[in-house]
Figure 1 (cartoon, helix red, strand yellow):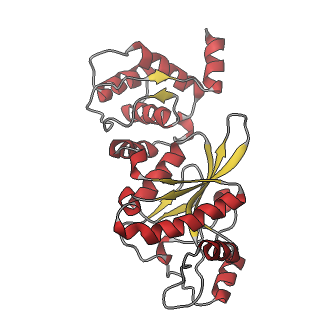
Figure 2 (cartoon, helix red, strand yellow):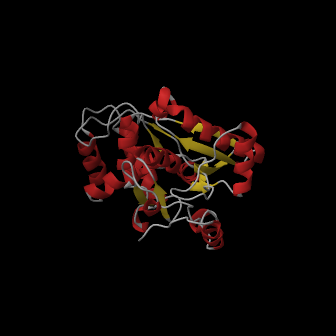
Length: 284
């Protein structure tokens, strides 16, 4: 699909009218898509498992943060490449602080600035609030060449302060490479076939898993034994195990080492969701 060009203010108005940068959940349309931005590195189009739509991510670092957001129980909506509109607001901020405002290449048209992620985050009291996050490599915020980047970030920061929205910068220091590798792997098991989403089956699985904790078996051997006891194929036992980790019913340390089936069964604890704990109480 061909990327869009912004050669006039009318182009911006047309894209706003066509719904870019608007909506929420599965209906949200990013202001920028992968095909709209000349890539300086890798970019990604990823089908969401939390939000049922294609997400447009413009770097490996954005992809890494996106995986964290999908894994988080608190993040309930993810809107990437979110536009700072109306343009007059960011223009006014730039003028007030003496910053040269960015324009579209080869034009005099003021650019629609964007924030990498606008998230809806569930609070401890049950409320949901918006938070804005900008994703930058640490090296791009340091040294002689970062002055222009910092100027534009200050415009972005003030825009969100004026909106009463929490804004901050996220760098690669938030996560380890192993954490991201593990989330990429676990994400494949985020959704199970209906037949494997049986709560009593999961309860039995967890009971057997806890009973073999500490046995000198590899993860794959442990899952084969669980599958045998439940009369299900090894692949089903494997899929349930990693799905329960993704859903955080089984909790393990994901930052320190990559998950491998040939490695020993990792140390884990069990957090029983409401539907499982209720059934467990009835069966005891």
